[in-house]
Amino acid sequence: MATTTQKTGAPVSTPKLPARETWRALYQHFRPHRWAVALGALFTLIGAASGLAQPLAAMVLVERLGEDRSIVGLLLLLTALVVLGTAIASVGSYVLERTAETVVLVARRNLIGRLLRLRVPEVERTQPGDLMSRVTSDTTLLRSVTTSSIVSAATGSLTFLATIALMAVLDPVLLGVTLGVIVLIGGAVGFVMPKIAQATKQSQEAVGAISAVLERAFGAFRTVKASGAEAREASVVESAAQEAWRHGVRSAKWQALAGSSVGLAVQMSFLAVLGIGGARVASGAISVATLIGFLLYLFYLIDPISQMVSAVTEYQVGSAAVARIVDAERLEVEEPGSSVAPVTGGPAQVAFEGVTFRYRDDLPYVHHGVDFEVPGGGMTAFVGPSGAGKTTVFGLIERFYEATGGRVLVDGRDVRDWPLAELRAAIGYVEQDAPVLAGTLRENLVFAAPDASAEAIREVLVKARLDGLVERLPDGLDTVVGHRGSKLSGGERQRVAIARALLRKPRLLLLDEATSQLDAVNELALRDAVAEAARETTVLVVAHRLSTVTLADRIVVMDAGKVRAVGTHAELVSGDPLYGELAATQFLHAESAVPQAP
Image 1 (cartoon, one colour):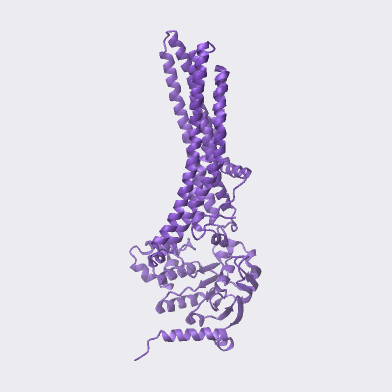
Image 2 (cartoon, helix red, strand yellow; image 1 turned 90 degrees about the vertical axis):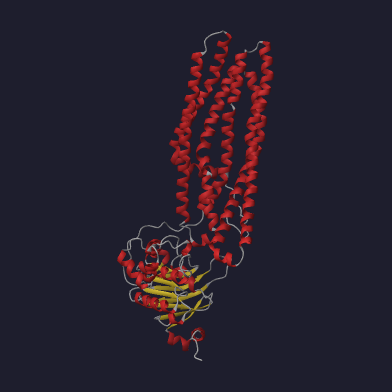
């Protein structure tokens, strides 16, 4: 089940992964970098080993002081150990941090590539903002868990065991006192760890909710302002931020408790060892130098214990992020795209044979056995009331959705048998809202045909009546058009979308209400451009304007998810009551728009 966000911004929980699956997913991220991690671990171990020698050198120092011998050489050795250990540990830390950044980069690259291949229904079921948070926020949490936490767990464990072994050599009795205190406090830490994972997962889901509600608000920014809804939308975002804060504070609380337990364990051990060790020194069981060396090793335990606690904490945090990343990776994707040669061949043929379709199993059918056939070339218009299933026809041809029943054929071949990249390379598609991407006008024009020549661009600008716009723009084709083309008018965005589709020189051109926002002059010019294109390609158009419909070679009348009639304008006006009513309504609308003479 995908993590989504409800309209209120409340996150829907991601299912928790079993421990085995979590480790498998973490290993997949870790495996390509295992040698770099091993190198970082080696440097870290060398640095730790130099630290283990320091208490032994301190013991010798104390003994020499008692014997009134020179300690200059020993101090120089001790200083060298400190400097060398720090330098080697720093190199190891750099190697691990660099590798961690690489892990995040590769994870983001793979996840982005997968999310952009999601099937349209999956994107429609999942909030885009939440998906974006998987790429940004969740992948960031992989930084530590796949590198430094693994090394911390390994080197911390080895250093801990080596320190315990040296402490056992010095005095087994004091070691027993130390381990008793550490085990007692360690049990409490084990109780805290699952709470860290739970709080972190809830915090990440809340961060995803923030992204989702912000994406909703910015996606309809002018509507928000025009509706005076800034305060309401801000409260929704604030509510999501408050939820993230609450879970973040809870996670920080448990992490602070786990971290402070390390210092508490060592301090309690120090008091116990100091008391019992002092008694053993007084009884002659051990020397003062031995007690000092043992206490130094006791404080040295802080680092490996902290490393192990940190590793477990980072695993709990990382496992929450991994669950969300794996959840995103399980969303259904389309087959991988590939580079396709330029489209060749004549106009495409399209046919629907008994097609049924519904968007989800819990929704009613949109198509109830749709049948029609479009020969290659010419223009075919789809008309009918709102909700008749006209736009869905285009979605099925493009394979944004799969037909529930029946067959969708292009050139007599089921679209499910076409390689997806090859199918879409043969189609030019202009959506109903004619989206324009942030960037320059040139980038938008060549979006579907990146190798288009300058001459081809000039020709399509004239056809789409954009040449005058380009001359007026300050930077011509290199003018930035703003977020979703906000610096262009609705009609200009439609002309850009049409030009983008024509520049591809498709075998099949799908126009979904592509001229609805154009003025009469530009509509007439684009009708001519589309009519010209129809001589070389197959044009399917969803239209409500009678001026567009009457140009069509054939008209498909749809109603309630079925095709009720096919014919020319003249045939359908007299032969189909619904079409006659639609045509009459259009005539009346056109007449009412013409000013009457006084």
